[in-house]
Length: 476
Figure (cartoon, helix red, strand yellow):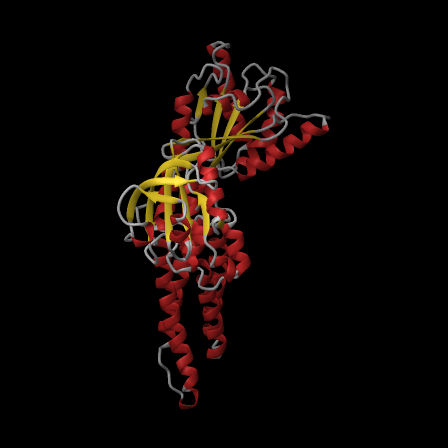
């Protein structure tokens, strides 16, 4: 590991397809290696340049031929992203040019960076803690205003600051407990146990708040799931296409066309939603279709919002069979009842279908979050009332109004560590209430500190680091 960390690494740091490309080189020999293939148009050679200066000149390939006119930025340790000597070459984004530059850098002694290796070096060199390093990937992957906002707050250190305050309180608590142990024979108490219990409760409340924020944070980061459900051939796939404004799902008048889950994402009101087109629910002897129906029921149990689509011209008995299976799974969820195909039926038929759908919700939809305002006659084919449906989806999300500096947990690893820390601090309170010896209480306190420290990387195994950074893109 140490030998790899001491290597000089290089990679393309920008996505292909743009006008410009940036190649990043980091390590002890970054400036030395770059100088061998770069000729400044004027001024001092590269090794004599000050940190954070930009130099215009020519870059040569492995065979010595002129490849491009480039700008080279020099950043000297420790004042760089990685904390190491760093050079960035800004060139034209021709795949030939960038590939030739990388090949020449490698021939001169650099090596291709592994995924996330630049950010891992930033962590190892103390430029950021592990939670902020993970936020780098979240910022890159953010696809909505809400997810970007949460990732930027974590990148700025909001989560780390909250954890630091927790650890300071826990360390203070631990020091008092262990100091009592040192003077146990003198029967000295350095803190009143009731005060310690109060402090423990405060710590538990903070950890619990952070852990509970994960459900919202993860939904914002991954996209809030919205399931489109109903009987076969009611227009669910057409509705998905209308919501996404693209032909994502296959549309056919043949019943049972959708046999598996089809997903698409879009941003509404600054929040990403995952729309899930599901297999139509009906009685069938088709094994494959039945598997699709089972997946429909599974997805429905996981979603936050359900869009129940009915065809006003379909047999009510068949629709009721679907309602009996679908609606009980919508308990506690926001539901919209959509009577589709309003462009081909008369007003009386639409009214009758709406009344029937309302009766089904009242009959089978115990605890569904629904009222008579959440029912629309739509035409998924023509886009009729789709804008009203989108407004409902945004309103139904009802996300808390987070302030800029609010801490919201979005990372599964952080959530798991917080749950363990929460168990530890609750065990501390139980031990103290039962009058357990201070050494046992102190052991649980240190376990709580250890689990919080794992989040920011103060206690982290190599395997954990590998699993985190291998999911980064190369060049970051």
